Image 1 (cartoon, rainbow, N blue to C red):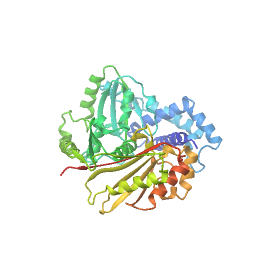
Image 2 (image 1 turned 180 degrees about the vertical axis):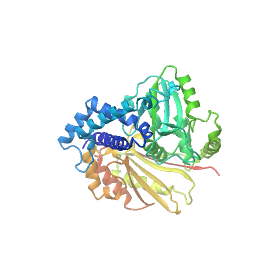
Image 3 (image 1 turned 45 degrees about the vertical axis):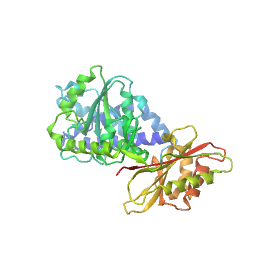
Image 4 (image 1 turned 90 degrees about the vertical axis):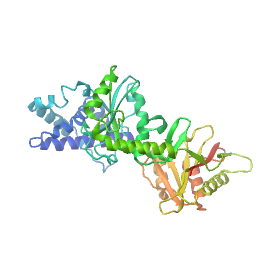
Length: 423
């Protein structure tokens, strides 16, 4: 099935149910009406731009799961809901006119970007301002001693400006050496820092974790505006963002002191020396070495570098197509010491490499797939075992051959590296 279609209808269903609930209670709880204005506009847009009809027809063709809620695809129900909204807006004309503050013109005209729903290409490549917020339905932000200011009913964390707003979406991917916001969030989550030629970032595994956490817990709003510098200053004064360190606000002094300490710790901790002076690189195909042998050697190499105590930032083995970067890895083996002091190895495969929905479902139903944590909606799949498990190489090879279409002729590079903190 089309995952984007399912995600869209689920989001519209969520909007539909929320707006319906608020409309039912509006007479006794008028203030709730403000919280659903953006959802209302999305539903109007959903009906008016023809997407509703396309999704309705897709449902008629059986492209949505049978047990999935789809009240939003009932034409009469959605139409009646939007009529009710229009009538109520007329009754509460003065209130609706004041939903966005008249005196703060800089907060009007922002568009939402949801990394779980939207694509970066939907953002114009123009200059402007943006507001990063914590999702209303997210797990919350660490170390907040008070309630932040809100925008669209969600906690404001950061305001910024950009010459190209489309590039702001890069905060949800990449590495923290290229984003002060990512670095701050990673520091607050006490991730392990790594020093690179570009600056401080986190290990490859933790950067992936951070990207996933940010997508699931944050989103941002943007406004195209050539006067973005002035607008951003006004936004900072009005919204008192948590993570704008240069914005002098006594409300967040304790958090900023904590963040200063954590960032300084990152700089100190990232001053590491490598456990091995060089990376170990295995390339296949190679005369006298098949894929099984290469993977077994890599797994053993990875396990041999795990120290007796938890003192290593990363012990990583990346398997990727020769000529590609580690960011395009087919698999990753992470070796370390768990909270119980036991050496373990964790193997990760990524959803995008399984050849679409059909290949993914085949993997999940297989004996190999059942060993991994994750489902069809996950970004990745993980298998954890004791370091040196003799069955691990065979499992990795089986997944690669059966589900990733890797054979003995595929040119692969397998790189193992480790780094540890200086004493």
